[in-house]
Each structure stands twice: as structure tokens, then as C-alpha cells.
Length: 362
Image 1 (tube, rainbow, N blue to C red):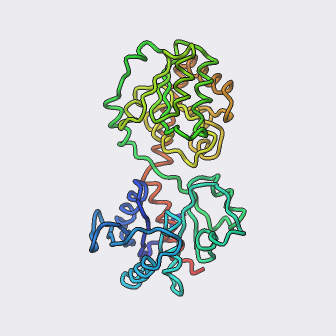
Image 2: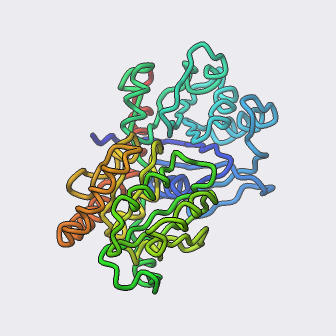
Image 3: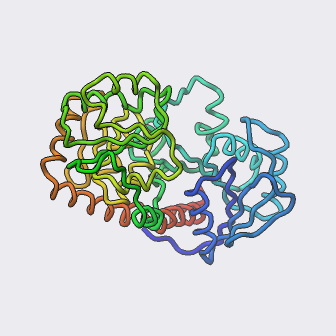
């Protein structure tokens, strides 16, 4: 549903804005009925960049930071703010305090399905505060959980976007690995695995061991625990798996692969899956909230039960034996990114949200 244009004066509070937040701010600032302001550390006076007015701010830390609250309240009055949007919990709690006894509407962000405890008073400084007018949810899973606390009308799902030009640069210069030349199926996993068993690396290694198929190669980009490398080095599949460690150009390694695998036990909304889809890679991901919200099972990739090496091995074997189908999956995945996760769509969702709140006095 589209809403009429309004005079929205929005302050975005953050400690470290990610790409998605900057895309959102700049996109809204280009609309004629929006004035967009954003806090920024390290500047001493207001500065305008790409339509966004950046305002000086100390680090926004802690649930109650009186210096931040006073500053936000001064900005509220100076710029006649109508809304705040806080991607972080500290920004939200301080914005709620700064806008007490005002008509400013506060919008929160929730990127995780982690448990909310009604008995914990700190939640009432943030997400459970009755002065939170609306909550933007990263995935449908997050929204489904929050519906046990809030009316559905108070929730909007807006998964962070991904721009295809970011992937096109990697596609123009993929990094081919000579060790995998001649492999019929080149798998890739990009993740920081050290101390994070829930990423599922060991499940993937066990699946490779079950297959013991020299036609299949696996590239691992990111850190890892030493015992995982030792597990591989003492196994029959050592020559089929490359541990590259942390690399700055991970997408270029992905661009030279055939299938992306993410066997996590939990993940909020993994950006790397969107990166893989934008590179026209079919995906194999665990059937868990977050990951499963990104792919279309059987169309852009395959879902497998988490922590199930046997099921993962079967999915990998299917990809090996169906090269044409997997390539078609990859193309459909890229189309899904362009259609459902574009920056333009993301900006449109927020613009409609803020406009709807502006015309609704409740």
C-alpha cells in the first residue's frame, strides 16, 4: 500500500552505521517529503553528504547516557523532528528518553529472534517500552516471535538489501584456485568459524568425509579452529579441502565456485547467502530461521536439517549430479536478489512505513 507524501523529519541514531543503514538514509533523503539526519562520531559540526545531514554525537553507548539524551533532545527541538529510527538498542533507549513528553515517534529495529524477557526491567528501556511506535524486523521469523508480544500492525519485515553491482565486480575478476582445477563441483563456505561451532563447519567436513568423492572440492574462507584443520589433514579428503583463512576479497573466491554452503545451527539473516545468490550461486543452507527466509527451496537452493552430515552429503551429491539444474537455481537466486532484496525495495518499505506513521496519530 502506498501512502501520500508527508513532511517527515527523521533522525537515525546509531553507533556504527552499516551499508544498509547508509543506503536507507541516502535513499530517503532523496525523496521530496523527507529530511534525514543521522548521528555521527568524530565530527564537530553538522555536515551534509548525499542529502543526509550528519550531526555530531559522542559514542552512543549504554541504556542511559545523559549526555547523549541531552544532545538528542536538543536536536529534536532544533530540527523539529517527527521520527527517530534506532537500528541499535543503545540508540533506541536513549532516543526514548530524549523524546519524553514530545510527539516524536520512535521506531526500533530487531534483527534477532533471541528471547525477550518480560521480567527483565532493562527491556522496558528499549523494545518493550510502550513509547516504541513500531518495530522493523529483519526476517519473518523475528516478526513471528514478536507477535507474541505485539500486535501485527506494530511490526514490519524489512530484510537488509543487497545491490547487484557489488557482486558484478567480483564476477569480473574471480579468483581461480589451481588446486581445484578439474573438480566437477567446487563448494565454498565463507564464515568466521573460530570459537563458533554453530556455524556448522564440522558438519560440512563430516559430510565431505561421508562422500569421499574426488570430484568435489571445498574452499573455506575465514578463520577456523585448529582441530578442524587437523581433522581434515588426517583424513582421506585432505586434498579436496582448502583452508584459506581470512581473505579481504571473499566474494572473488565465491565467484569462482559452483555452490555456496552454509550449514549453520543459527543465523539471523546471513548476508553471505545474499552475496552468494547475487553471484548466481545455488545454495545449500540449514533449515533454520534466517537462512531459510532467504532462499526459495528447490528453486534457488536446497534446505537441509541442521547438524545432519548425511542429509548435507545427499544435497551436495544432488548438486554434483544435476549441473544444469543447479545453474538454473543460481540464475533464479540472482533474480530473487534483484526483485526482493534491492535497495530500492528496502527504501520503499521504510518510506511507506514512516508516511503511514505520520498520518496515523496513534
